[in-house]
Length: 239
Image 1 (cartoon, rainbow, N blue to C red):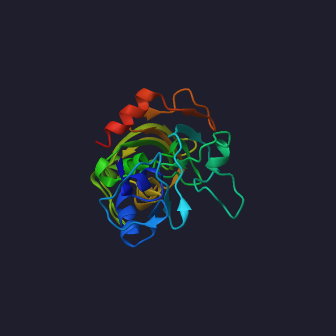
Image 2: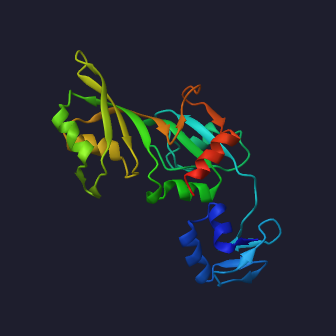
Image 3: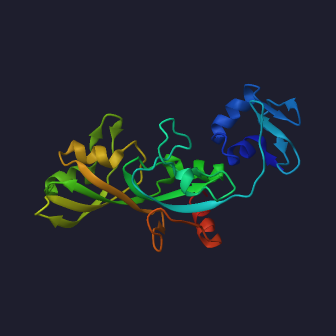
């Protein structure tokens, strides 16, 4: 038996806190009866739970690592008809969703799953899961400018947490500098905005690591299922 809000969260419908709001507002039914008591426990394999009239179906959890190319969006639907990450995993029968997002022009490591509890847990700010990127910026930023990002810089939505940054390579002919950047936040377009703030716009961005996961063995556009050991290690971040 599981708490009702946990079942809703694990189905990817909402975070556990939002699930509690859905329950108390009378939008959840168990076996056809409206339930508003937060302490209610259900059997997810036997009881029929619906949210806003939509039945939650139990399906096996799937965990996929995708090497997302540039020019692919992380939303599941796009009125403009652009290529979506769901198109790259179309042969997987379960409907899986990105854990966080990479913007249209950012490539690299993207975790996808239908495990709502894991998604909510990994994205919660308290987890502080580190993500590493390779950023190629226009120009040759001096150390004193990079130090501003290492300390934390003010953006429109707040001051960033300190970033770990090291210069990898400088192409003086093309006037491009490659840097390894590690952060644990998830502000919208954060790394691009960080470098814009110090006057060195990002020309290319690739995520190469999420927690302990890397792109080893995955070509651009390819995906693979996580191993049971990798899944167990990810779940340790949620404890």
